[in-house]
Length: 95
Image (cartoon, rainbow, N blue to C red; front, side, top):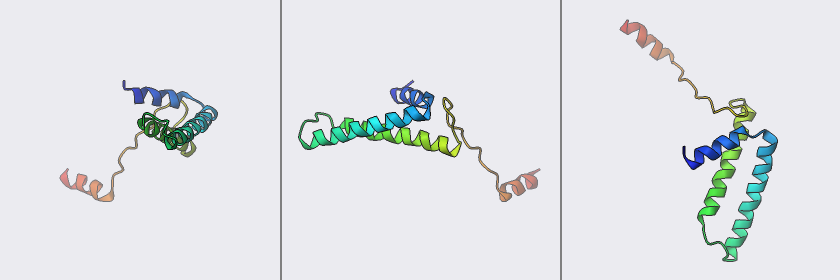
């Protein structure tokens, strides 16, 4: 399992309150990295990208829970493709 998948599983296992705390902490870390970059103290600009992606992951999980598409500790549900009138009609014609 990749590093991203592992961290995603860990994020999904956390309750909403802990995710919000992690979001706040990560945003603060991103701010500090931006500040350090402007003062030429950051050695790796990849850290900025990683923090932005982590923030996006947390926000995505929170939004999915808000919409009811995901619960704590549950993977996102995949949507089944809906059949259209046309495809149902075509199936009958072939039979």
